[in-house]
Image (cartoon, rainbow, N blue to C red; front, side, top):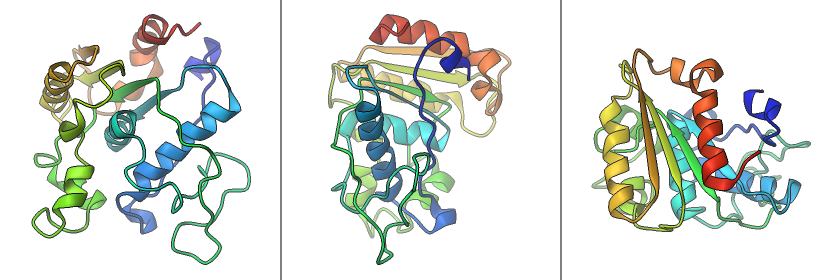
Length: 217
């Protein structure tokens, strides 16, 4: 609502998780499909992917590398009308939207380092890295930090986050900058893991950056 009130067209989505029986690459493909949907729904407007916590990991991953697998197994974003069944069911349909690169990424309190974020990683990737190294590599934003150096990124973290430490954001920022990305970082004093999602805390920070990075209203 904060973004929409500032004349920024906004699409809110959900994506497959372990609680719905989905694991990587399904969640990332869902996000990639949503990027295509947004680009189709609002043509000729830059598309920014914004996510919080696990969603921030996916936003950065998809921003850097697009869909990690073919879009065919991906269901329509469940925020759009008449969502299709989940992948793996006979009625599942491919993503109906053409693949499109995101123009910018905003990550809020994301667990970007899969090695350090073990609990999150095993929800996303059910097999350990020694049994499925290719999936772990594909799901790790740090390994893709040199891709698409033209992609601007804003990373925001609460200094008092006890769920995902701010070092996660700082480590990714270092990797992105080494890869040539214009990367802005905001560590907000006195803010915890959930408060960083509060529009009264982060809304103006995001809007100011969007105006500079992609020319938002």
